[in-house]
Image (cartoon, rainbow over all chains, first blue to last red; front, side, top):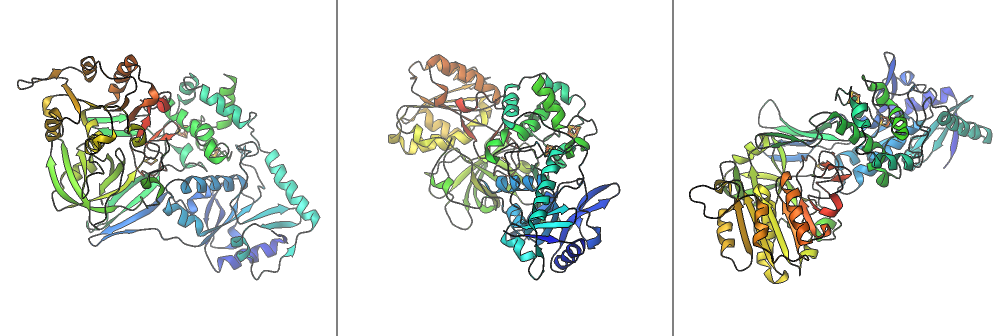
Length: 340
Length: 282
Ligand code: SF4
Ligand code: SF4
Ligand code: FES
């Protein structure tokens, strides 16, 4: 597939052209940080962002999503996919989105996710600034960055744009981008390699070593120790690029005759996550902070590896930054675990 | 456990609830109600013994329930709802002619291929009888396909015995060697008193080749397995039916997870040897 070269002006007129046909979700500033939001003005696009507060999965797996609508006449599916472009996704988040694609499609396919995802075109972008906790250069290295439709890399004299799919090609129809030169392509490859190498944090063990050690450490005192200060707030889950657990609830509309069934992000680190009602009370299958902390680490680095071809952590570092107790950082924990 | 039965290979959208008509609704105990249902659209509800459904009502939600009937029963299927929370309380109000909404069948049921042509022992405690009844009835309906069939049932007290009509049948049936116990008897109770494991001593003829199904409160498993070990039944031939909190029933939401397994998709029936080393299982 072709690679083009874009100047700063070509980029903004292209973004404007896309915005004229469909919604564009991209990184924009919010106070001192960044969020993925619907662009009102192409000038708001901040491709120099370090990372966003919430991962871009919310564009098609929103924190709250209707599944069914019901009323006296019956029940209908509530899936209403809207075509949109997700612009400026970093490589680690692209990887994470691909992981979610695999997980939502396998077995019983999750149509509510897949329909939204199908309607979304993803344009990646190179990391220009690192988030202080990023370690994507060493996280899940065996899983390729894949599933996106185009990729934009900032090089000294503008951008290179790789078109990677038919959906991506459609977005540049009518544009007169010049093909990138060999030097420009080489420069963009270097930019992306350097971004990985320059992550502020690093895992120094292989995925296999980590997985083996985790599996052998079920009864380790480290779980208890590491989770002591946990508030069970679930922030390390909700900010995670690859977390996808959800809860399903019903609610009535004001008329008390119609209503909806919706899902919302859930978090395995919260106390009630594995609780069941039993006669006379509740039973919790993961009662302690340590058991929940262990479950999260196992899901990130052991349980899903076979399905995904590597660990389910892409090294975005969001959990490390989101944790008030400062205990969620996978790099720190894995270092401790491996040395134990 | 993998399975290639028709129910699992066909792609039915189990995300969409189907409307089922309540044909009959009866309180079995103070807290358990027994429903007989059929799909409103007239189609047959296809499932395997041991599979589950998400049963619910719009505006309230859904709960996972094991099917209590056998698929050999042509024009209806049965579920038992135990009153524990908001959804089950709403379901308990349903009467004949009302609608219940179900999604399924979900998960992997009993290993029918392995049970055929084998001796089968079912050990059911309390409401563990509800999902195992689908298998008990299946075996009784297709008796010639199975060898020696033994059923142990334990309840806390005679009043808490479920499916009393079935129990009366099984007591005098030639199809099944049935034995029962209660933890605590009452004035009218003439049978065995004691935990379910006390029944094993009365059946010394159980062979080490027996395929065993265990379903009951978590505490029961450890003690039953100990008895099976004494007989010399390998853990590969023991199957347990587990319960977890479930939401999606489709292997996505994470609520039913036991280590790296999903109760709703890989279970609810698991081969004991495959889960005995999973610390979160039992
Ligand atoms: S590890 Fe940190 S972010 Fe995660 S639940 Fe505990 S306190 Fe919250
Ligand atoms: S576990 Fe932390 S670093 Fe890994 S993907 Fe999730 S939020 Fe990012
Ligand atoms: S109930 Fe959602 S994963 Fe099993």
